[in-house]
Image 1: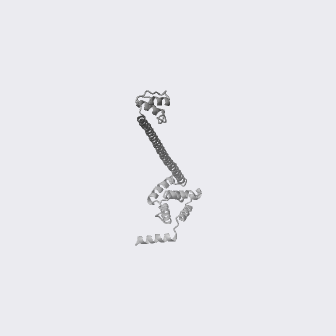
Image 2 (image 1 turned 180 degrees about the vertical axis):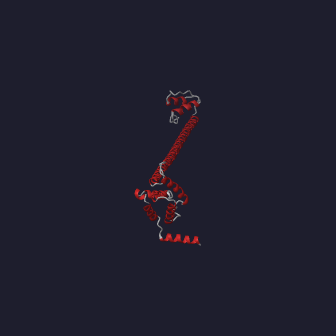
Image 3 (image 1 turned 90 degrees about the horizontal axis):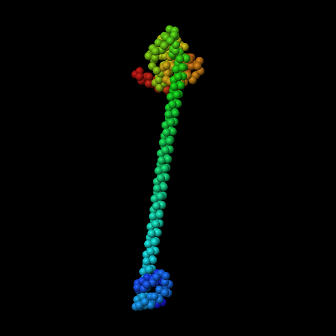
Length: 258
């Protein structure tokens, strides 16, 4: 009987219930023990075995509960880790999207900036070309290339007509193919045949030269830029042939003759 009362009160109540003894929670362990030992048909060995079975089942149940609790905690911890990983992955995905979008916007901004810069350059180039054309026209007019007044005398009218005929007789100067010295000789002969006054030769010549050469001449002082002899020296100096280039041209000329 010493085995009774060594375990939990709950085990004593369960033992009493198994033996058909009416025991309540209000009863103390000693009172439950007395009720069991004084019950009808009490057999100590049987009660002892039953009590040990109840205790063993209780311990096993506790172990199962602990294992279940541990399992649930592991599941909860695993779920927490999984959610944290998902959250981290989502955060990284959003950061990557944000970084990609930022790079895309930067690329668009850079492309737009380049486009605007190109537009500005094109506009500046167009304005520069307009200014150059304007300066060229003004330079030609100041050199006697154009007639701005319909009431000009017959000499100017003849000059314009001669100019048109002169452009038909002489091709435009090509710096890559033409010899400037020979070209000027031909120009002077045709200008004399067309009865063009020498003071108008510069204006006539400008109409046959490329734009970059006209701009080159236009940079000279106005008085010198309108002087044909000065312009001629300027052109001969700019396009002067070196010995090697002259030799090559001579050889090419000899081959053409043969």
